[in-house]
Image 1: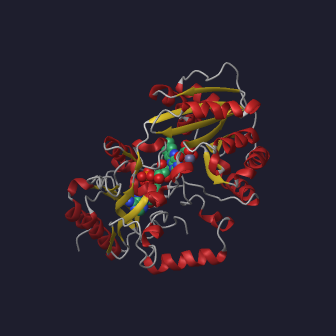
Image 2: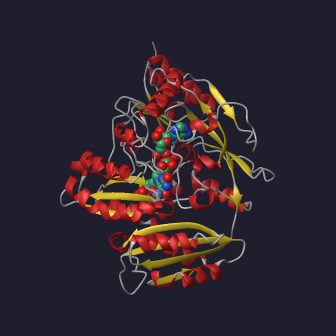
Image 3: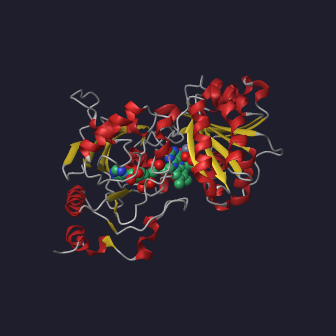
Length: 450
Ligand code: FAD
Ligand code: MLT
Ligand code: ZN
């Protein structure tokens, strides 16, 4: 009987079955360095048919598969379990013709966000989701985690951008719904089920994306405020701007880490407790109305700087987007992406330090996030030895404020054991039933989500 590796080589070609430990290393650990395992091998199929053949070969041998796109996931869902085959979607990177009439495009699951952005922007369109991992994260991974990012305020999360998918199911069959009809009410929402399933129900190989108009007129404001409450008040007021596209939040300690790591000069002469970044976008420069909104916000605004030129805007975004790498440069954090009703955000931020200190004495808490959605990124440094205690403390606190244990990163393997804080036993039973009927052998992404 030929080995599984040899059968995989027959399917994808020798060059696309990786077995060398050093070569596999980058596929075996996650972006933060917090999760890792020993894969049996890495296989890189070129198209849906090869993905289907790989799935059937692994199923016949009872060998589990872990699906990987850009491996920028932050909840331990993109790395293998020991002995599993990593199926990398990186070669599924095609980008189809833009359908200008329906404002849609079909892309390979392995296409990176930035590659799709440059193609569609050249044609006057844009992708409705954007965030700092754009160079590496893939459209398939973004759909699988129902990623959020910086434009949810205006365009929603990744699921809202997905008009259709092609996917290989655990039995090797191919589901293909790529027509992208705006109205197609014919039964269960298979597309919506697979988007956000974190690779546990099927392997996305192609996606039909809804595109949004490219808006060249952009203005960014970085606003210094005195507290989380002031930040929330400012964002709620700014929502009256029809051009508002992003509202982000970070704090003095995170800004200090960013300036130390990147060498950026502090944005203002004085340090302030908290900072809000607002971005407005339209066909023309929206600075005027943004400045008026800041004026009318009164003394909530301690200081502010506004930029509408590309360089100036990117410089202001760098303070926010450099948080993840600047924190990781200091050490591997326990990362918890959570959401609470925006009215509870200030109370959560006030309660976190004591809860985290009790779970991991002497640890360092760094917060930032997408304030409009009440989405906070809780990063706890010097706490890896207390990962479970910190996770338990933070997720229970979030749940006590009526929040979600995962706002946009998904559940992965990291938060699986706390799923019950956000989903009822009945809902989890339904999810288990779906998993059991579609993947009875537990072939795909073992331990992720359930
Ligand atoms: P991977 O990490 O490879 O995989 C993620 C999950 O999806 C895994 O469970 C994997 O098995 C599954 N998967 C991947 N591809 C497929 C497929 N084709 N079919 C089925 N399952 C698949 N996330 C946000 O939501 N908002 C942010 O603002 C944000 N900012 C980030 C900034 C940085 C610097 C970094 C490093 C990460 C950030 N992330 C953010 C997290 C991450 O980028 C997202 O979760 C992204 O969606 C992961 O895409 P990926 O291609 O890297 O997927
Ligand atoms: C972000 O908003 O920058 C990301 O979700 C990454 C993170 O949480 O570190
Ligand atoms: Zn985020």
